[in-house]
Length: 158
Image (cartoon, rainbow, N blue to C red):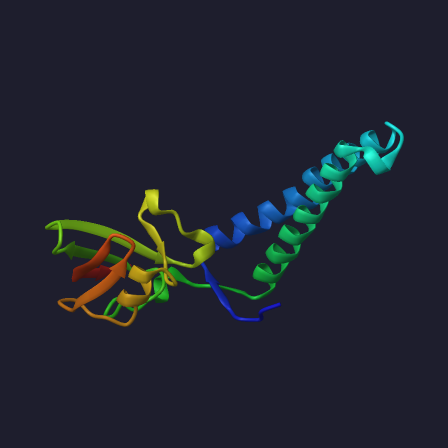
């Protein structure tokens, strides 16, 4: 297991804690019920429902372990302390994509909080990595699945 620090917003940290609580209580109980029901059907050697429930239990326990590790290594970032002179986690960055001549705004967050539809990109994504540490006016070239794009940093805020 990795012990690297995960930087999260207070909201993201709370969401992970809520997800962990739900997995431990509701989902574990549901899988236990599924296993008991499948076990009651008789011969376990040819019981597909039992095998599926046991596999689901394994996946759930792995997810719980990952959530516990993330929470244990989490550091909640105080958004008011984010320096806006360079791009950092929680920075809101307005960029101009020179390839399509379009402006876009991204908020850089931890991978666990990334949601492209809401403009939240991970600091570990290609765009996020290329923007980190840069200042207003800098131009970065990013290799993305669609090819290379040039992004000009128009503004940084938080």
